Image 1 (cartoon, rainbow, N blue to C red):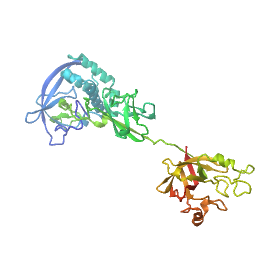
Image 2: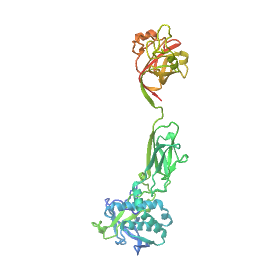
Image 3: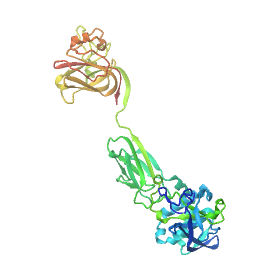
Image 4: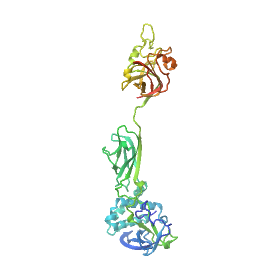
Length: 465
């Protein structure tokens, strides 16, 4: 696919297709510029195209300097595939994109030199001709040399565009670093940084921590989040609208009408159209936009090991319970002659405990704290909070698992010491208003009276650490 100047994707021109009623154009010579190419003096010729009503429609340049093009000849649009292999077309369009974005000032300061540069570039890429002199254009030769010396990289970057580099690693500055990949064509382009998701809790900052809104290729930046911010964060970097940037993707090629059937081996000069009036047209957005995203999980405590048969008592009760155990057997006392009952242990059980709660403490905004204990050593493995809300006891266990709860107005006594296996009618004898189930109900009825006996039993549970 050819290109000798900037025809962009969004522009539809009448000269682009050879299938629409075969329009024809008259060719006129409109300028001659001297060059030295492959050691011999030649002339760069600018051609003007006119429609059948003799209206000027654009300039064009020769694609093959070794073939003639006669003034007043008739030309028509032809397929570019007849004249250039795809790799040559890529090189031409890449080189023109590079020149436009890195040396575009030449067009304004030296328009003739700019035309000479483009024509010589086409000849070099397509035919390998070396230009050593351009009339009044020593700087043009230097630019042409720069383009040819870097043509492989220019072509690669032209086809690749830009990508977002980096990953979301937590640093004191923010998550990153990220940066826009360097691209020889886009090295001078500013990019607007924009959040497309999660931006309400995030800003972009540079390596000093200063908030930024733009970045150039290769400049590292970070995403700084407000405290506790989490979720999905996505952002883009897009070439700022104030950049005078173009991406060349197409070209118009014309052949002499007398070459019908001989496009692959023409007798007359094929032409490539240079349309300077298209330089302000919209460019290909995907070429200069890239994006990235990352997810931050909500921070919080992790779960510890799983325990079974865990019960609850008032915070700090363990020492009192241990002191009240049988020193020989380590078992709790209950209804033993001459020995006080072990406090806070359910009668006739080995390690189930209960909490004794004052209604006034339950009514405080912060409620009452509980220790969750397990085993015959009554080891504290977790915590809980209980408080009175609208006549009910609300239980908050700092963990995750299966539990049940029941409240009494007196100490419950059963022969097997196993409260959570009793019938509701037997539990009611000690002031309970419900039965017991491992149903994870965190709100239970509170009995009347100022002293409440609360029993919580966890089947299997893990506590947050």
